Length: 447
Image (cartoon, rainbow, N blue to C red; front, side):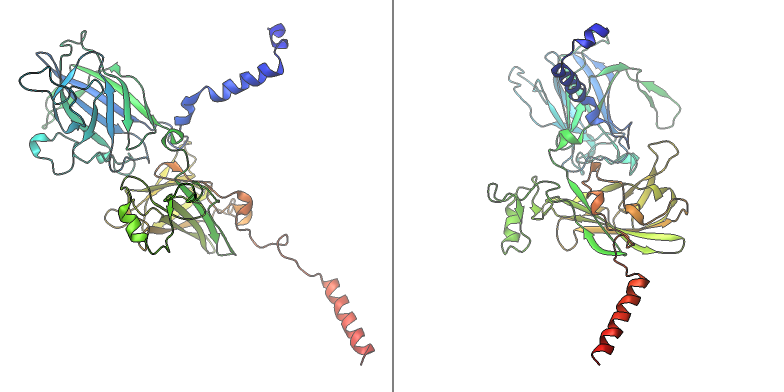
């Protein structure tokens, strides 16, 4: 072994290091603040049909603070054989495909790779199943676990009719609504059990498959989606978001990449824009979302922070938004005004992380850019004498995420500093005495 290692050249060493750093892409989907967060899909075969089966598919969002907002999720897969979807309840395929080989009643979908979407609210009751018809919107598990699941039922034909002959679909894709999720393969698990409404009878699925999908911010978007600015009562400096945090203004080569808020044609540009594409206000940071942390007041035993979230997107509203913030004083968070809050403990009993979100029907909707395009709250912390200080940026957050995506923080050396001897120039007593003596001597000499 020692002989082999001694034969490695410097190029080989660099190559091995490069492979170790970049060949393991699964870590891109790991979130240290939500290590067990994922979207689980369960495929239950409830009964057998003459040429296939009836299945109930359920999507569970087990992510603590990452939700799926409008226009909602879409789920795709590939059939292994020539399966078709005869009928669906609680969902629908986006395309029927070529069903010309069926002469009487064409199936709901004949595509080899179907894509399924949720139905909209207000769907007739005979087309609904439990947990359906939310327009594809799924809440995060911590905000609203009741609305963190979606279901649809499908009748599959030209498939196996026994546990040994049936083949699971493969190559699952989940758009929520854009990319970012990577799904594994369906695996056979213990059949799901179902309770009757009176809880006195239990039935179970003929067969159950399950898979998980994990999220990666790197796969979801090439640039960040939010940034952080800072200020304090003890310093007049306002630290803005870093320049080009989410991209740079590029209206010369890509006209329309942002909109000047002072433009006289602003309203016409907003109306003409594609509803599904962002239309961001022209700023130095070019982020659709800015989170501002302001150290507001200092009391004897408490200190107070104001948090403001501003939307710079003229086209997009953020429903059921949330913030995840890290700071060592969150273990002594006393009160949160006008936001909901809950502690996250990703490191066991050590609590330095909190999740904040809006109050239902009050400020749970972050409106598009404009006079009402912001939400704000204040946080009251109790001081821990052993750790509390305003020095060296301790009072500013360590990390902030908006809707599960990490925001760009300013560099630590730009944080508002606490006035001290190193930042202010003081005059010593000896210098003052000498200046006074020279002044009196000069006045006496020329009197």
